[in-house]
Image (cartoon, rainbow, N blue to C red; front, side):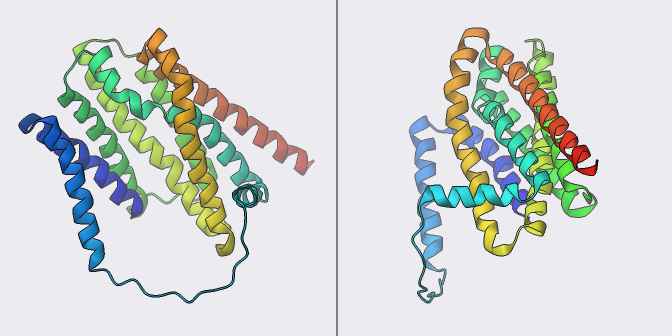
Length: 266
């Protein structure tokens, strides 16, 4: 359900933004963000929040909490390796969200409307995959499916970097973005479900905090690394480099995980 809701916001956001930009000046478009924040605040005023009883708790440092979260993953080797692969891949994948508009405007030479359409395609892939997972798709081997999602993200990103800069190529890029949105959920939905099924409730918060930390760190770190390269060799080249790197890194982690399992059996 959360995946569908998030996908829906990605689906409607580019369409509404592009429509506002086509009708109103940029100052009015920016004010719409303020208006949304005001409406959200007003909506919260009618929500009754129950008072929680104060409970004694020990003060714990951030580093200690992160260490505990990592320990949760280390206790389950399958979970540890998929999170390791995600952390390595997100360093290359996270910056791509900032490069979609540049692919449309600089590489394909098209307008902002086409850029919004690309974002829409990505959201369509997300929402379709979310609906499939919530209805007909039942992932029995969740870690394996999550690895397949990472492989899909890497392969499709590399394909995006090989599309020629022609008008027809943009449609291939838009179709690839649908695949990227779907592959992202193929990775995250089974992983989230696996954590909810296997991690103790009192440790689950620590585990998800580490995943959130990975997302928060890899985006700025990846941008600092990728922006100079993309500016020098082209944003299309960075799509190919990131996709190839993700595919290789995921393969190395899978091989490492497989070797560890075989050693235990022998």
